[in-house]
Length: 494
Image (cartoon, rainbow, N blue to C red; front, side):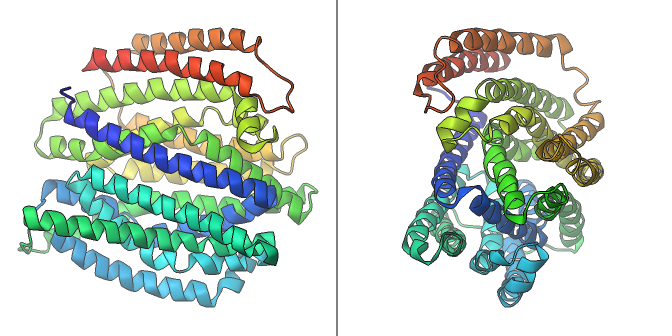
């Protein structure tokens, strides 16, 4: 088959990320059944700190390096070596500080039990930033296969060690065992880094890596300005996650819950429900990942019509996938909760968050389009406003009667909605030729498929406390019908 390169690259990315997510979801499900919602809540709080520090170190450098390498492949390796030295120094410093002050950090995050979690993640603070930078360099060269293999190896090692260490240390206590298991994050990152180094050695033998040195300071200035804007935008998301890890349990306690109950409720939302609703975004993330470098080249070469055409097609495909995923989550919320977690506790949360795949998909791809245009201010402003609105919603809505976790959900949805809306307003001239009527038809088709599946679902529903395997044929039918429609839509645009 003569598969277009763009489709092949996106397909590789989707398959790789899907496998990574499935492994992560499997590990999280097993861990949830061992540690319970409170244990997963602690796990999630620790990872929110790790995500914030990781973004603080790397900022926008991996993305900037990828964009720069796409424009100047002969200079990418030179800048990778320079930037990796910088990140190594910063990462080593923050790694040692985290290790030395893990008790203080745990207290600041609101729970002293977090100390083994934080200490176990400290080594990853040194390793993962350099790995992210190397992947950025390879993204610029469009070596998506190597990136995919490294991600699979990283996740396999991480999950394998996480579950193995948890099992070995379980006699010492569940929370202690789960905390120690996070050492797998560092080991997984190291394994992936070694694999990519072997790959670089291989391509270096066949196709010599260029080492030409830039002639002026303009490239360094571009890296500074570009990475600052990207990092300012991206840093806000993990900062928001860490802020949520502090505010949501605290405000739940204000509402009258104990510390253990608040942590467990936070685990239900962020460690379980959010994990499920963000799964469909692997497709839009893959589109964004492979689209960015192509848009960068189109914009640099002043092929503006081609740039606008690619942008519109990507946004329309994300729209179709987003509404399909959102309807799927809305229909099967209880069944997914029962199948994955042996409980329906997260069913309502999954239903309330079902709009997330659509909002996140449009946000991710529109951000990539803006960055390819060297317009990074709009996403930064939108993200700042969105996080501010979410924080205020969490603070004021969570303690109110009948809100609690619904208040937290409101904040999450509000943040994604504001960021997405800001991006779309900034791209109104690029996206002006998208046909609203066609988007409406897509919605109606997905609604019709959903109505059919809901009607059939009534014939196969079992009691809510049973493991409802009978619903699987309906899930497969939904995927078959919507998948066929997605393929039809893609071919009509090719």
